[in-house]
Length: 334
Image 1 (tube, rainbow, N blue to C red):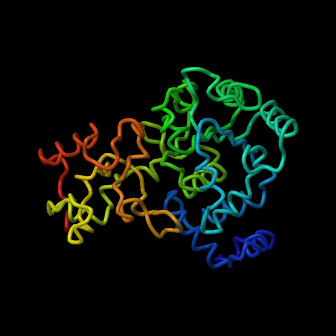
Image 2: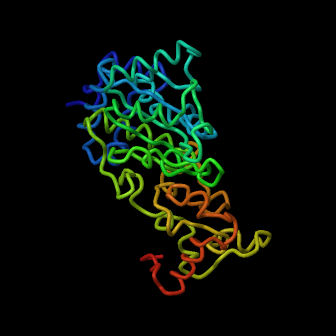
């Protein structure tokens, strides 16, 4: 079968209308297929089928609680454009920030979709536990809305550090928590980092569309395909760590590329593919910008990771102790 045969004329027009040629689309499919553990042909065929029959796929509700809306911004800035096509394909019926509807009409769409059931529920932002009045949306406590929607959802995806494990709101008087804390017994796909990486979101949605099930998850609900290795394992400063070269003076040019453990880097205890996937269209990520990893993919973010730019947190002290004890082995061939 020729590589283009799996793309229908309808799908090809959709792809090209976004300024993407078929070759680039297939390259994206090949890269994503490797992550999802499928063959390129199998994956591309499934994507074509899923996108071609999008109207038959479950609708999506995006609900936002205590957050800075950073995950929504990540969604709308998805790149490469192929990811945008995938996200455009889903039937996003309700999103409080980016949808055209407002007021009673928006609330009616939400209510009707929940009543209908069988949708994909995406949650951004944490849920307050100190008092429901910390987060009221549409005249109703956000917690109650999530409980009602989750009861009828086909799949539940928590995006960003706040929705997954509480994030920054967990360290505020609202005592925000991730949605897993109020939905015991529910299978929740957690996509942490602050904000969510749009590749993690589009890839997870694609997996669900093409297989009808959640991807393999680790013990805290994260897709193993994105959160299976530590930041430290793939950091380009790993060699400096192994050589014992640690940055202590931000103003010393000689230390510019040295390991940031002494400046509070949480990389050895943070599991995510940031160092490989990177951000801003694959250009950069925190450590390459000269910032230590803040551990935003872990349940302890934000409270357990502070202070962020010194090695005074309990997590940093543990990392330093592990290094001194030889519990963080050197990488082979460094």
